[in-house]
Length: 259
Ligand SMILES: N[C@@H](CCC[C@H](N)C(=O)O)C(=O)O
Image (cartoon, rainbow, N blue to C red):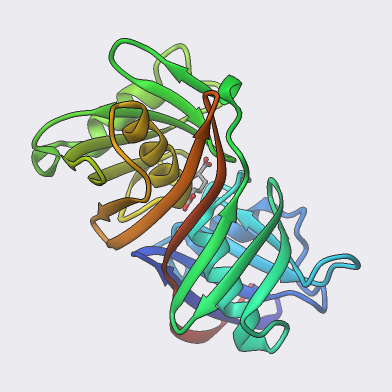
């Protein structure tokens, strides 16, 4: 057993255990570490684990795990990783770093982190009569609904995530309510957490794209249970380009745990 230091960060209530792993003390091939640390009863408790490591070409590498040990791109986690890298003195006000789906850029102003997301090609945006599926680094199911505050997101989200079509790979499920042409409210069920989270960065990015395809305009302001995010992009022949996700990322506490 070894003791090590961790930090807790949150980005609009999507919370993460973040570890400076530049010494490679934690073994990133061991999925049970994320399972233990993210557990809200037996560990620290979070929606994911983030390791920060050195990289030869970029400012740093961010390695993200869901609480079940699976890996995918995390928008809010990437914003928190940027804020943590600034705290560690690795970067100042801007950065180019490596995340799960490739290279990203970000700028920081106070607690606000503006993160570049990858272009979303037309082939990654599928429109169905009742819903969209959009891959923004992680796969998202987007469905417009009314009165989402009264929705049982865990139950309805799980029934979509575990249906025959998605059960094997999983999908994140986003319920979207249109408030105006550039304002939406979103609640998300996340795969890998297998529950509703207070916010999902790749999820709101997918919802903002769906909103513009639904007659809305960019930039899109998004209300989540954990706070406000903004997504801006241009639609170019069916693809979303120059995509940016902006919102707060904050340190919550620092601790030590034995593993
Ligand atoms: N909370 C994240 C998404 C994390 C990954 C997701 N659970 C998946 O496995 O697809 C975000 O902010 O994007």
